[in-house]
Image 1 (cartoon, rainbow, N blue to C red):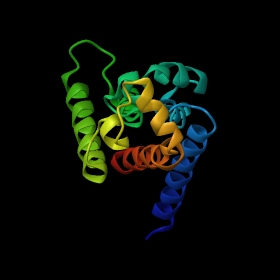
Image 2 (tube, one colour):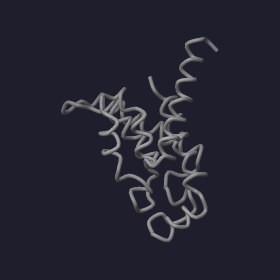
Image 3 (cartoon, one colour):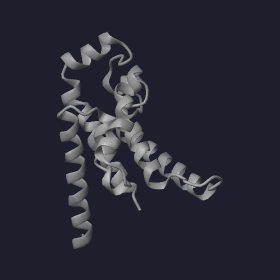
Amino acid sequence: MSDSSLKKREGNEKRSELAVRSFLQSMNCAQAVVEVYALETDISEETARRIAAAFAAGMGCGEICGAVSGALMVLGLRYGKTKPKDSKADKHTFAKAAEFVAEFRKHHGSLQCSHLLGVDMGTREGVEEARSKGYFKKICPQHVRSAVKILDEIAE
């Protein structure tokens, strides 16, 4: 492995651990993913946190994992079109999104928060069960770490 690839890999490891640390310190999974890419996507950490705030626990209803939603937001910030009819940017963005989704699904078997945690995150009881069983400290950090690592792997 070359020195530059080793440095990039070390940087990526550090970014994934920063995201996990942020998640464990009170940011939600989507916020933790988006905020570690804030500066490189020309937004502030505060803006990143606000944009991603409503995506925790599968958008609060157990659907798409917040770490996945956050990663897709990052891809939009990186590659999304900014001009009408920019089909090249659309194609590139959707190709990267499909690549991310396929990798995340390959590693975790699902994109759905409730499936990933094995509880109904769309209910207060499910959230409480996840909390009482320690899933937010044991399982969710794995998804945050994985989302960041996959993003870094598919970056150009």
